Length: 251
Image (cartoon, rainbow, N blue to C red; front, side):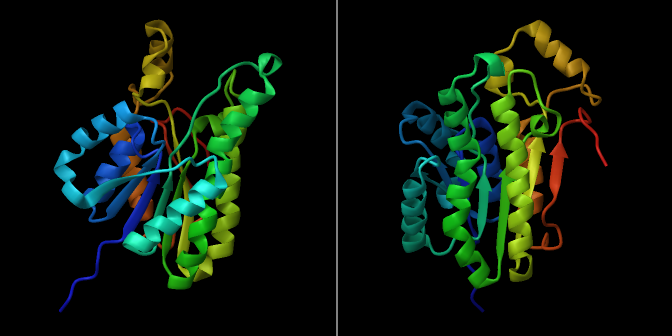
């Protein structure tokens, strides 16, 4: 009896700290993973390959700019020709352009939206038809606790991350009867370079406001992604899974 090939997963922002861990855990779950990120991040790409050296051929890299629709279409076409249909999509690519609204430039608004929100559309659009035709798909979009609560200096980021969940709920309704689930994961404050860059005093204030008493780790987020991407997670769709240590609780 022949074994089925591993499901094909694509992770955008795949060589970042969070993306790397998502790739690692999906590979451990038996997926064939393709990490997608900008080709210009050569130094980070070399580190990524070293960090995932133990994954052998389970994780590979493909360059693309998620803010560019044509780049995403070409990426998916290339992947499908080489590996087959994309069955799992994790949209983890994201940037920040933090500044109060009264000082925010149109460029800071549009640059962020093009990656954090347009990028989700640009990646979902070329994969969703194949997923529905095959009768299986798992889409997990990374939102943020700040999309739920808002945050000073992040009108652009908060708007985009709230939009990611609105997008996910609508797409979930369109695809639910076709075996495709669409969900979001909303990380809280995690031990990432972005948080590490803030002053020790501010970082301690953040930790003091988290009921579990620590920052999250990329592994905490990746575990939630893998849960929603599992074959037997087919009855969960249109949901947002908060992973924030109790920082924000809602019904």
